[in-house]
Length: 211
Image 1 (cartoon, rainbow, N blue to C red):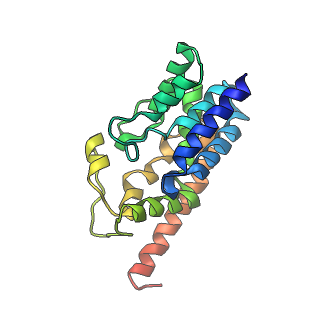
Image 2 (tube, rainbow, N blue to C red):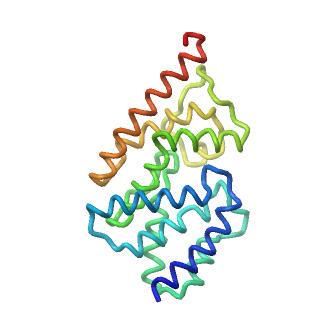
């Protein structure tokens, strides 16, 4: 029965993710699932809750969902889950969101795992690729070295006032290493963080004409 629920969820969410740009497509979900499985090798958690939360965590992302629609709620309702399980999954998903640094703290080990797994996919080489994929889809500049990174933003400011893709590193991506909550997440994040710093240093050299 559990396998049938997961398969039903996968089918429904994949159809949605296949319509998103490359920064939040089905491959993103596959990578986050792999990250979560790696973390769960060292953390005791409900693997079913984690998988369902990962599968659903971006279907109702404000960046993509249409006004008046809530695919997350609709899919959860279709799976025949108890109210308790639906609430737990919705809580995990809500706590994954960064919201410009105003996100809710993870209140369970499952939320910690999904949050770390998602944030790991926002940093390192794949994080760099995703940042520029999303920026390209939104017509944003690659870089603007005169643009000052914002801090203390509201969620509305974070979502609605665009900055260059490179500025996004300083507003979010470079901050994620210190926001990991599991030991495995922290270990993986450290290497990916260093790679981003090296990339930004090289980008600055090349765009300054020094390399």
